Image (cartoon, rainbow, N blue to C red; front, top):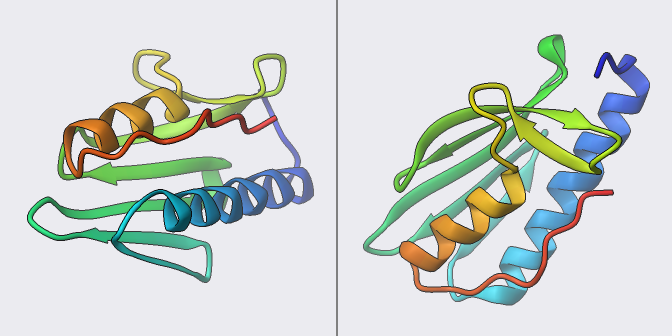
Length: 111
């Protein structure tokens, strides 16, 4: 989907704020959201990063579990979908946090 800059900023910021709140409530790890970058430090696992990439209108995710991936927003699905394979960011995050820190995240819905 080709999104204008204002819509991207709104949807991306809402996504990051939602993730920050959800992750803070879900586990015992450091969560920091600053300047469009969400950092989650998990002892004995590593650092997870989720950030806005405005030039491409994408969310970028870096994980010590699954590696790095870029996501574009699919308005019909109400989801951030991988630009390399179509995986849903919500499912990848849930899988990574279950495998890494052993945390079950509640249903993540970005619509």
